[in-house]
Length: 294
Length: 280
Image (tube, rainbow over all chains, first blue to last red; front, side, top):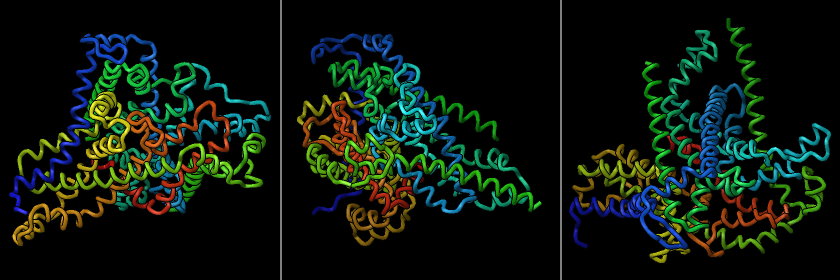
């Protein structure tokens, strides 16, 4: 075998990864952008319609509802999962309890379960033969109680949000715990000896130290919320009516049910724009907050 | 003063126990309930939803395996997750080596290109991907699932491997070059060996992620024999399927493999997730 020179070795090592990545992720993004300006009828591209697909989507009430539901998912992620994750990580880190490894092991367990399994399991939990229903029946001594609230337009997203909290909080707990362990323990000891209150320790030591990670986690949570599909699809498939529609489900319907690839692509581009916009917004807030701390 | 500190820390102990036990119960109870309910016949589930099985039976499992094509799906899941994980890890380490130790100016451009991928989600490319795969004949093939799995694993894996390999001493590589080793040999004999810790992290994150992946298999394949476990299990969701025992058995089958992995390797799993996200 002839010896490769340095430059050829460089490309031999780099190109396999780069080509697969370019072909499957970067190229389709541009293709998506192109497709989003085209009109499709009966499985066929019928022409160029400029921003037509975008106009259709942005004026569709089902899309509005999907967007609102994604926003709810985002709020529960950023304002629910992350603070709860910090709280749990902090309680474990201060070692006020025995068996922290056990608690960590148990609470992190849902990370190994697929969203589809979680969705079907929780549907059973809320079903007439479920844990939740049976529990409420026992407390209220009403043997005929069934969960009805999720059928209403207003509360249809509630079970999805509850399950998301159950599913992902522990991910943030683990991330924050790993980062708390990087703060030297002498810092905590010194603060306790000085008689600092827990609330002071949290606001003056823990949160500033964690702020870069909180930022990263918010980015993770936002991009995760905008793409959510598996759980919602398996749990409600968007129903009842379209009360639990999310943008990815809307996209799925247009691409794979109606075979309107133009509209489907336009939805993906909207998701990308939203994602980049929101992440820049969070970055801006973070930069401002950092200045304040200094 | 130390007395006061002690009282305060005792009340925190109580608060911690209450919150942590509550959280653990909420996490574990549905899973435990699913496990034992899968051994109950339908009638018993209806009458006594919470009671432990009085006469445990494997019947639900027999039915689930018979109707659900679960063995094939299980093997598919192993194949998809295994092959894509090995490929992603190897390709990412090779790219990481190239991007950090060769000193070419283009490296930083390629590196930023890879990190850009962290923000791109599956559903932003799924429509064109479907069209592309249909037109080149990859639709409904196993390769058509594995290639996107590899691609979507790459951004994070390249990030982890570059930041790790950057820390490998240059002297190690220079010495091998002087000894007459080629760069490709150096990759196989040195880089791969010294990268074992990050390799394990990448492999675990990838394997778990791909094992539980749903959308790509669901949209890029149509044949029953191409399905992975999550997609097969989703077919037990139909409104026609009112046999809860059967459903529970299917859910348990979908949970057990990763549950075992977690039991064996939970420290690496927890460490992987804790550290994986730091690097962004």
